Length: 112
Length: 113
Image (tube, rainbow over all chains, first blue to last red; front, side, top):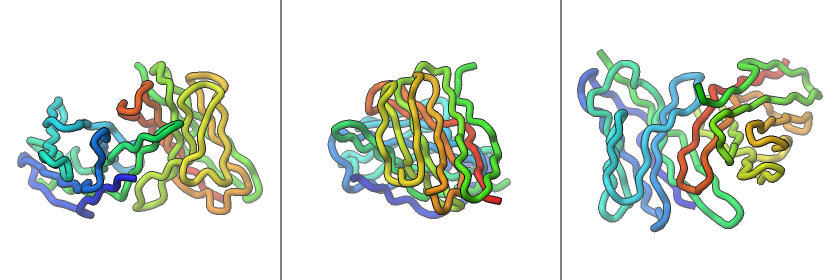
């Protein structure tokens, strides 16, 4: 199963871009990279996902390296409400079903 | 509004009791999932279902049971066989297709009295 590696925690100043890295060196060709975030005592919130190309939506941008072994989630103008745990996930697909492996994530602290 | 509803938000159980956690979705999603989260940890998959009347074990299914009699409902029973049931339980759903993102409810926090 593909596994992801993320830093345990990061700080970011309010109004600046937050760049959250993720390594997924064992990713296979048909596996997407997903990002979710979880604010304390709530369910995870889907942010963005991608396969090969960079992606952007109203919440964030996802930059995937050409070899697909790592990616970066970018929150362009971080606010205090972006303080959360961010999960980088590679979806595993196999016969009869699939499962999503959530690691410990990166705890992002946005400071005023 | 469409979404996933988990109830209750907090649940207390006496040792030896079975309890059932509710999960309902009105997103018309085919697939539904149950995860367990312990303090400071990521999520671990308990069970998932891709279609009505069918479900598969995840990584930590022992001590848990599920049913999927209706598309919109996927209740989880925590049985007395689960030796350490105190945790935060999260339900999710997604559209058909392995690349569809999952949408989560706000969780049920289960504690043992």
